[in-house]
Length: 262
Image (cartoon, rainbow, N blue to C red; front, side):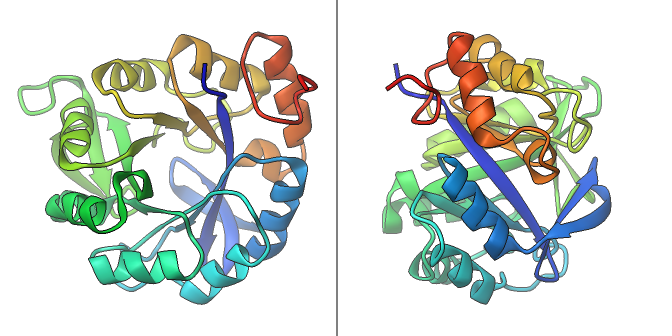
């Protein structure tokens, strides 16, 4: 069995890590470079960096911050926010990222998924999905709708169908971010995560709602997620990564070093 991955998320706005609830009322919580280094030293398996206003502001990503973070860590690093072209992806990879996370740009131009997979390999392409429960209807039979531009624009796309389409187009991984759970510390949206995990054959990352180590156990063992994003629970020091890994190891989840399993 592959080890499950714990991935701290740095949502960056104006050069600072920020955190909100349901994509609103964000407050700054720290410096991305210092926080990235701290999570690397704690034993994070990967790191993800989102420039959360780049898509809505129709601008490029803060490449200088990406480059500075990449110099401080030696684990896989995924970067997203405002990536719309192969040139955008190439710039991020050359700045030190191992993966690119595409979201709004992929909804507007799905072929960018295929183009990126052909140019850099599917393993580099993460399709990130902002999803909100809006109720079942003919256009959105699952009741889960894809939203873009930082939760501002509803697309009418069904999340399950878009996940399958993303895999078909060449994405190597899916990150499922529940807007309803984002920043709430109430736990992941297990129904959404589990439904998508069963619908595709590529790895699925659960995102939005992690508040305790038990929430990660549920995402891994009940919803079938391959990895889980953590933010508030680590940003505010409530649960250091070694503690999370120890809990998961003790509760039947295979994790990498730091779990006391060596």
